[in-house]
Length: 372
Ligand SMILES: Cc1ncc(C[n+]2csc(CCOP(=O)(O)OP(=O)(O)O)c2C)c(N)n1
Image (tube, helix red, strand yellow):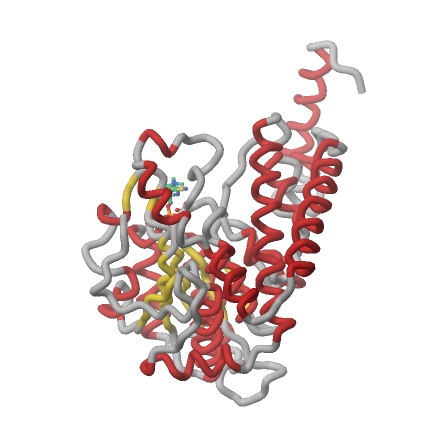
């Protein structure tokens, strides 16, 4: 769909790369004006990095190296911008497409690929990275996030002014997930408990083959208002708007302002996953419309106008190709985990049912001619 221009939306960077701050968004503009060139280059580098990773992961899936891939092409602005706005103590509860947010918090890209190959269940430590495990069950992570945020509040780690201790929580979900009861319950619990949380909805306009018009009658940024959760819409293909909105509202949540909802209006350029064919349910002209609003392209135009030179963009491209070659090599070298893992990682101590099941499987495998 083409955007409905009557809905207010914060955009700081227009699709042609022009930067400007409308008066009503002045406090968000101040955040951007305080960023140095290095930070801006980091945004670009990571958006380009995650896109290159994504393209390689699709190819690896097509070669039979991964069971499934979930592309995030087109959503890099929303993910890198919001990810970098999350503070050093804050916790992140992602859905399953947030590979861009993951790299802003030190998650190893290979652990995501291993999960999609089925050799681990995430493989990163959520306490260390503060980036919790992917959730395939739509909306479940939003409840987990609110529960965590309520715990943070009960522990007295909100609004004390102690920057080393105070924290907030951010939860990511899609337009489709907003139709889940879990999300409505989350909004209610967050509101009545004044939990320190930002709900970050990436409205990529499709829930597999269901268009967003079938999921809501009001713009999604308003979805929280009946529960008492204020919200705003930002241009999700504008990395600067996504950074500024997330920074302001995570800071406020940490300071005790309660929950807030950000709707980042973006678009899923690729398939929902490598298991579907989007040409069966949407028009190519719509995809072309959104490709012209690409988050990386517009940010590159902006940076070039700021005086960033060709050599920077060439280096980023080369780094992307090196990354792709590296993950390709590492993926091809992955081995199948031992079958016993399905028993070994159930309980920390021995359990009679597990012992029995393990023995049954061993006997079964041997009866089929398997060797130790
Ligand atoms: C509780 C639940 N119901 C249904 C599904 C099947 N399902 C997987 S993804 C998806 C669409 C989700 O769309 P959206 O929330 O917009 O996120 P996106 O995939 O576009 O990022 C559905 C219905 C699921 N995973 N969990």
